[in-house]
Image (cartoon, rainbow, N blue to C red; front, top):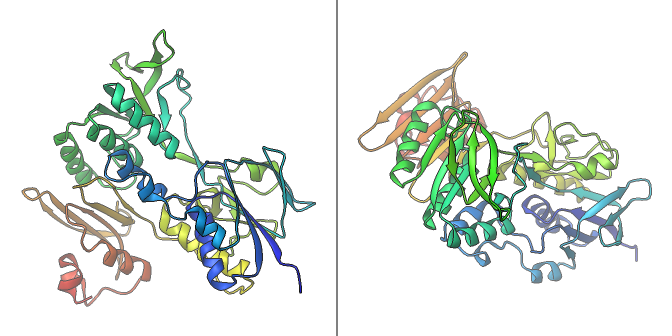
Length: 406
């Protein structure tokens, strides 16, 4: 009987393990599989960290694959172990405990790392990112002991962190360099509605502000933020939510081609055909995706090739955005900002707090921005992805799927 090939997965997150789930459906007996995870946990749903922070779910609720799942599939799981070197010549990986695992195929799913702005004081106690279970536990602990929280970053993650801390009783201010919230996901009209909704919940917003220094007390813990204009605000906890960067350190060290992510082909292979990369660490056709839908699409294609079927191609994704804050409905996708050779159809109902904007180019829907009523978001996204003509639907498009008859 022929020995199984060896597959090593570096990264125990959603992209890497989804690839294994897809692979096990196609070729359950092809590989001996080893998975390295830097965190001391099994695979969990990182998207649901926000509801955990807000107290709506527990850590147990967000586990995707428990230890029994790995054992059932004969997967060797090494938790709390970091791969420090990939030896591509000898086809093996080395970890921080001196361990070694040989491979025939290697899957890099190292995700991303939080971007920490180079601000003096960022290493003080009480300055945290919002990336993993450890960060959430630190934030929950701080919320029970301290009053003032400042979130740096008015994007999706920053607003979810701010909402969660406010739900736990903290006095929360959001500092954002831009002129409006979610400036990569919403247009100005929708962003204004969102800001009003969040202010009604007690959140404070400091827009167009640049943090100059984070000030600490004698105990080495953060005590305040100072802005470029000299203003200071109190802070017992500072959450950095100013974006992420693809985690390419391992790939760079072993000589793979990296350019704002590990560069991959349509088969999710790197320039070394034995090495694949999926998820937030990968750069496909110039884009590194940070949302879950593209990661799962990549996982399906990578699994197809790892299973030696060789027929899948990943051609990029149309991305969409939602905010995980209870009671606030927003959705955007595609070219929601409009402009250029596009036209926009808008509906604004300030009384009910509903705003809808559909962006059309020629005979195609190319973007959508919804606030207050997102029931048809998935249908609009499907129209954008399929690129089908909307001529017959055009007059009924704003009414949604039921009005347009699908």
